[in-house]
Amino acid sequence: MSDRLDITFAPLNADPESVTVVLAGEGLSFGTKAREFETKSAGAISKAAAATDYKGKFKSVVEILAPAKLGIGRLIVGGLGKAATLTAQQYVDLGGTLLAAIQNRKASTASLIVDCEGSEDLSTEQIAALLAQGALLRHYSFKKYMTKKPSDENSAEKNGLKKLIVHVAHPEKAKAAFHPLKAVANGVNFARDLVNEPANILGPVELAEKTKALEKLGVEVEILDIKDMEKLGMGALLCVGQGSVRPSRLAVMVWNGAKGGKKQKPICFVGKGVVFDTGGISIKPAAGMEDMKGDMGGAAAVIGTMYALAERKANVNAVGLVGCVENMPSGNAVRPGDIVTSMSGQTIEVINTDAEGRLVLADVLWYAQEKFKPKLIIDLATLTGAIMVALGKEYAGMFTNDDKLADELLAASRATGEKVWRMPLDKAFDKLMDSKNADMKNAGGRWAGAATAAAFLQRFIQKDTVWCHLDIAGTAMDGNRSDINQSWGAGWGVRLLDRFVAEQHEKGDK
Ligand code: BES
Ligand code: MN
Ligand code: ZN
Image (tube, rainbow, N blue to C red):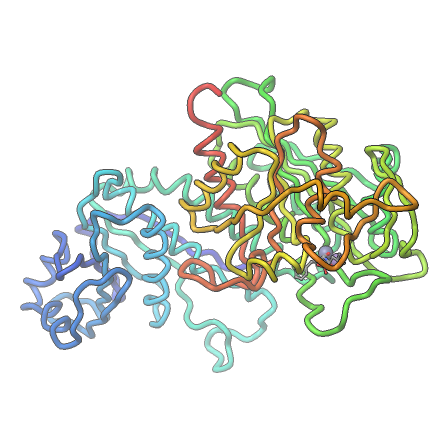
């Protein structure tokens, strides 16, 4: 696990650290504290701003060295731009930018002063909490296997920032506002750790075991082993792992947080947890294969989401299910041409052992419906290279049988900046999955690879089940780096799903 940034809240008049950030709005408008600094230092901020043509544009920064009479070594001014128009997500992004500016300097503790006025929608304390969440997300880096100390010249760690003190008029209120936001950031960072971890350390058993960390948050965890899954008839999931010396697992996380009690139908989140995807007998080319340690990005998103929901005690019943397997070629591996029977009873001709994720999901989706009768299911999977051809690393592909769910997820997507784009489910794609030898085959032809994969999954969705499949092959790993993510493993999906739950399933007595 990476070193976490410790964030605390202090009153505005607490002594600032040697590296301190203040905010300035468009046209260099200041809050109370920045104005005080400006006066005390005989106009140090406005002089520096004039010299650098700095105007407080959103996310722009200027740094002032040893301003007179402030007892501060480096004063970083961060721009708010038109503060009144900023969205919550923009404050989160700004928090990331400011953290990066701090990290350019050597300091183990830094101050961030939040003295701006609140807007119609956001109080100053909420703004402070949002900035803090952005800082926490940006601070994440995976350096567990770096043996060089920060003091070493070759260290990958730029500096050792350990603590950020957020100065704000009502620190207790800001702390309370930060609590749920911190839970979500912790969920994202937990997911990032899982995705970044190499497959020699994180096998299917270990991935499943990681869910046990959620027990301390009140989540009930059950782990099914091979025998359990054999009894359930999960021939599709099991055939994927049969070539690996490391046994498959299915981890189930249950969070019963709904005020209405256990009777309320849960939402199910299903994740593809292929800890490494060699392709199996239909082996992948060598170049870039190391990235396939991230083929459990869907499982990581589900575990991270459950983590966030439980830590912030979400008013919802939710179940996370992750199928954990390793796809290896060996004398025991499933062969192209093999026919397996899924838990649903439907038979599948495995024509390409590299189309393994859908085999895993087929059984986990079926199990989720049989066992939990959920009000809706969302699955996340690094399922196809084809989704990257269509949408690049910017958007996840969204396939759903429900227009309302599509709209709700799109709204959560807009709010969080985790972008999704709706893709088609179509009988014509479904037909391409028919097989001459079994009920279906596991790979369609050359075209519409992401849509045929989704059509395959839909064959395991029961009539009347509201369902959405998110193909996150482009976004889960090595996605575009951002203000709030510099990590290879992005933890993509946690913020999206958390927001979806908060907006659609926690309000009122649903
Ligand atoms: N895990 C891969 C998809 C993938 C590729 C994710 C690159 C992230 C980066 C998946 O199991 C796979 O191999 N899909 C095949 C399906 C094909 C054989 C029908 C693909 O996309 O080529
Ligand atoms: Mn594959
Ligand atoms: Zn895969």
